Length: 518
Image (cartoon, rainbow, N blue to C red; front, side):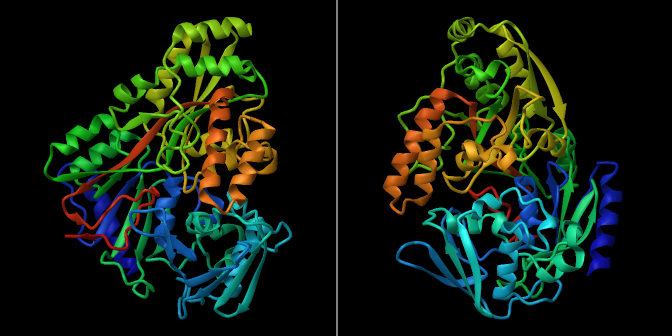
């Protein structure tokens, strides 16, 4: 199969080169990605761009049921939770094997989590593991027998099952990690519907069907993920037949595909937030009034209607409205009010100092970041702020922003797609989530009351109580404005009429087990 798939791809590449009347082969799905994956180790990445591959190569103990963010069994066929919510006992499926032939056992599951959580673990140096925060409540993992694994938490943790369904909870082959060490991310081995057989940097990741997949062999022979960072090139490739699926379609191209019977446009709302991180530690945004001024100055309605062409809604807070039970509907977005912005800048004594603004060329959930960055720059300059844009490729951009903005920038674009109302604020707004502690609070926001609300919300076992706490958090964070809250997006994809069975998920994952192609 490996030689077949690679040969198919070579022929495909030759056919696509002139970008005229190319046609991808039957049984091989070619997906146009927005960027090169950073790694194929699920414990080492944070971007949905990478998750779209990983969710087809690995499985977790649990997964999201189709079309929902509700949890259902996966590698664990069942589980029990203690009355106090601190002990989870999972029964694994018997007979599941990894792509390298090694067996799934409770000891392997234990290895996975201890690798992420224990600094002294012999394979902890294969990290870093940026989302290990998801499992910070785990006190111990025990293999009770070959197929039974028990997690003991240091306190009740409401998002635990949901986080296990997230890519950070995907289970990797212990044997492969032990064999490849720090190179495991280039030599992945999971239990998923597809197994990676080739990764040629900046060209393709090729994954062939796993005929022994525990949940049923896929219909496709293989999937080829092609990183095409330039949106216009992706569009041209899709139109010419070089791609079967294109994700994150630029808004101005959607009408073109909708009007062509050869394609289907898919859309699905989900828990997405596009925002600007503001450096609250130093520079002009250390003053709350300047942060509020930025929220008033930026015409978010124009961004949504003109640049994004109605594919998103203006955001009001750090919690996406897709989490209806936890969303504070009483909050209204900051209106576009340049006069109010100028008054706040004058009150704060802003003296026209340059604001350094990090913009990315493209990346997971980033919508149309260059155009949006340029429009934001113009809106801020219209109220008297001097804004200098620095633009970076996606993975380079993350390397600049995630370690923190101190000494580098005053503002940066960012997008998150999350699985629980706990995730984004807990990882990016708490005092303890600053980059020095391994978190994503790159703007250094700190409010002890917000910390307390978030800490209580993740341990509350009553959903109504959790909702109350999250709504109070949103009110405080909106007022203090550590971010500019810009947009909540509806994800999209374009699919060739040769493809069937593809549905977009509210999780923003691309699940391909049940996809077929003529």
